[in-house]
Amino acid sequence: MAFPESASASLTSAEQAYRGDVFDAACSSRLALELIAGKWTLLIMPALLPGPMRNNALLRKIGGISQKVLTQTLKELERNGLVIREEQPGAVAHVEYRLSELGRTLSDALVALDDWAENNAAELDAARERYDARQQTHR
Amino acid sequence: MAFPESASASLTSAEQAYRGDVFDAACSSRLALELIAGKWTLLIMPALLPGPMRNNALLRKIGGISQKVLTQTLKELERNGLVIREEQPGAVAHVEYRLSELGRTLSDALVALDDWAENNAAELDAARERYDARQQTHR
DNA sequence: CTGTATCCTAGCAGATACTG
DNA sequence: CAGTATCTGCTAGGATACAG
Image (cartoon, rainbow over all chains, first blue to last red; front, side, top):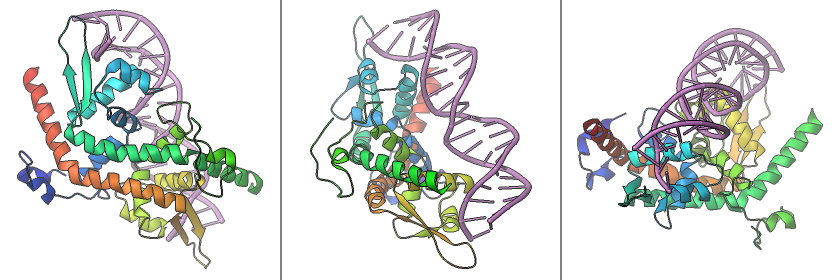
């Protein structure tokens, strides 16, 4: 659950000493997994890879997300140290979001997934059609 | 949204020429993304990477999953052509699940995510604690 | 052993309106 | 522009019992 705390007050190089097991429901790596498994995390993080982005820009870039969910997800990502929120000085409100170092390493892995989805979506569609057609005839 | 691509031979030409955009809510690659974004998909697929597994073995290996959700998720993965379900002959019921070719390519990407989660869970924990402590003092 | 069939509930997430 | 505040529907998912 929370046994890495003893050796990781500041997390220098001793952080590699700990390795979790995602298959263990009680392991905190499960929390990490559930965070990054979120359907919006998979889009927000890669969207920030090219550079910092503002709220509205993200809203426009990520089709289908609502303002509320975007804010919620960004806040959760910030809380976990993956995204950095920065209020820019000025008269009008101006906030930028960018990836942390840690966030960038995650984004790389997520981009691979996005690419996989884009490249294999058609094959999945075809498989679904085949499966559903088979069910039709069998029942 | 159309790219020339020489992919799998089992696909029709129309399917081969298609490349999606996950940022487009209407694109079918979104469906693919949502499928693989599921918290259980991220565990089931890598669990099958070493070799075929039976229902009960998966149930034991994947901590926290229920029989119902396991069956549900496996069926959805089978429907999308990622997992193959095979009933073994015999007196007692005996079913094995294994990855398809397509599924194996996805699993590789998912394992990378699992590894990331395991290696960085401690750092996420620390970030959360820092963030929550800051909120405590600021309010 | 491998599921199916219900019932049921917490919380995710959409729509809408308002604030600094 | 960048959020917050509600209200609310939906459905993922847990518990349990039963079936092939």
